[in-house]
Amino acid sequence: MGYEATVPHGFKDEREMIARLSFKLAAYEVTECARISALYPSCARWNIVDLARIKIEPFPQEMVFRSISPIVCSTHPKIESKPATYLTPDRPEFVQALERISIHKWEAFNQRTWKDKEIIKIRVWNPKSKLVEIFGIKVRGWHLMVQMWGLEELIRFAYYAGLRERNSVRG
Image 1 (cartoon, one colour):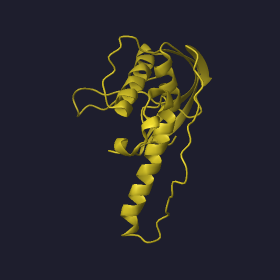
Image 2: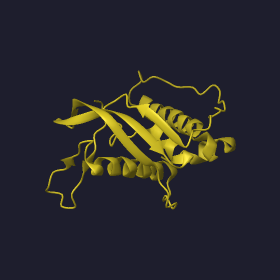
Image 3: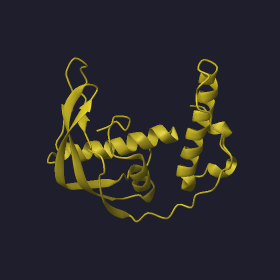
Image 4: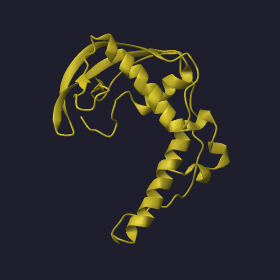
């Protein structure tokens, strides 16, 4: 997005990731609103009044939680004409996909490659299925109990960013 230069210097260290993300979103909304308001005068306007540091408590190296929205995992074949295969929690590929998704999201957010060999480990149990619609196609999503352990930085990021493959899709 290019808003890194507008983030105050004190917000750039890794421990304040959530504050940095909040600032980027607010800056994006202000910029987009200013751009759109020329075309649509009724656009809501945002004013950033104050910035505050958010103290982030340390995460444990092992964490158990329940998903609040259904999680859908799929494998995407190398040949584009083949459809994706949607995974169920009883398959080992499901957990591998969750681990891969958390690394990909971390890399996209931080705009650099994850170089550490250690990643988070995930275990899921107690799946409850729910039918969700993704781009007009109904697929099976899963409410789960999730256990994560490993590096605190990745656990924190996966917790806040979510384990869903597509966060923009509501289910």
